[in-house]
Amino acid sequence: MSYEFPIDRSKVREFARAVKSDNSVHDGPEPIAPPTMLTSARMTWEPAEQSGFRVLAFDRARILHGEEEYIFHGPPPRAGQVLTCTTTVTDRYEKPGKRGGNMRFGTIVTEFRDSDGALVAEQHSTIVETAGPPKAAEEKS
Image (cartoon, rainbow, N blue to C red; front, side, top):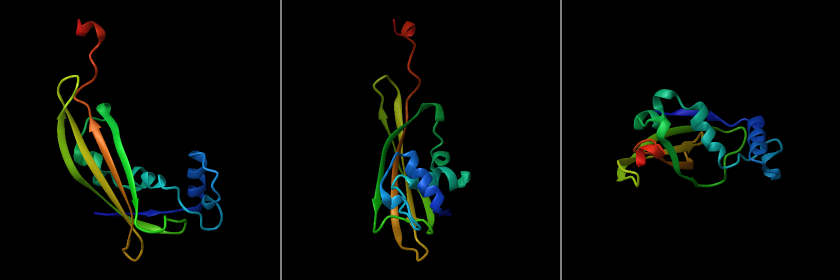
């Protein structure tokens, strides 16, 4: 399943200001989107039923952001483009936690394609679910 991410000029400018970018490429009639703006596609436009978070079924109270990687296959996206996004969970695994129990990991990959179907960019996110909340100091004694 996929969804569309319209890149709006005013949102590019707004995002650039929010991340404190003063680069002039983020201004003008067809500004270039800051690379991390792609995250907002998944957070804002992705239908809930397609969410990698939903597929992983991790406890949101125990989630950590493990890693984020962006791969661009050409020029970065610009205002005026409408990208088609497809998100999939590509990996799941567990490791022993240092405080006991297992930590669960999941990798979510979102592909961004232009109107011709060409792959513009990929976003790889590693999400970690801790084994449990930290124990209170009095419980450790």
